[in-house]
Image 1 (cartoon, rainbow, N blue to C red):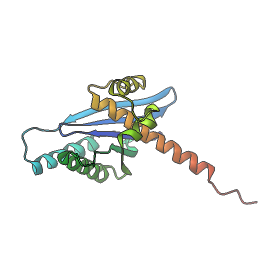
Image 2 (cartoon, rainbow, N blue to C red):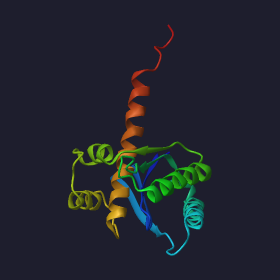
Image 3 (tube, rainbow, N blue to C red):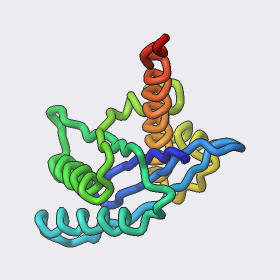
Image 4 (spheres, rainbow, N blue to C red):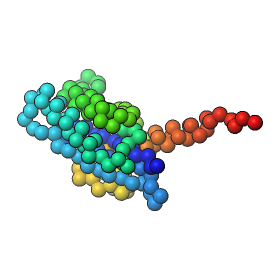
Length: 172
């Protein structure tokens, strides 16, 4: 069975999703996004974000259910965007509740290094890489999400390689 990894890029305006799996002829990639409604007070906005995430997960094809989901980590430093932090938290909770698979956050520099080979890759490089994987992103957030999904998939590959290398020796 094919293992899918999802990447998610959250902003206060949109939630972008990327899906990545290895196929026999190269990567299988999807990108899509949903818009967050404007003009809502903060609690209503968070409730709308959760509904959007639940709807996306409900619409996921069973054969494309992820083994792992990685959400781009929000900036938690002194200049942290509190509405974004809250949105990321709601997205992480909604994904876990709906998909019942591991959901983790990953800093921007880490997913860029795992996907593009450099943690300081610029937006045009991310876009080009997503397209080279076979994605057709409609916006930068979708391009980011595809690359986050590829980074997530690299964690699956690493964990499988580790498990194979650490199997107990056969009994004699």
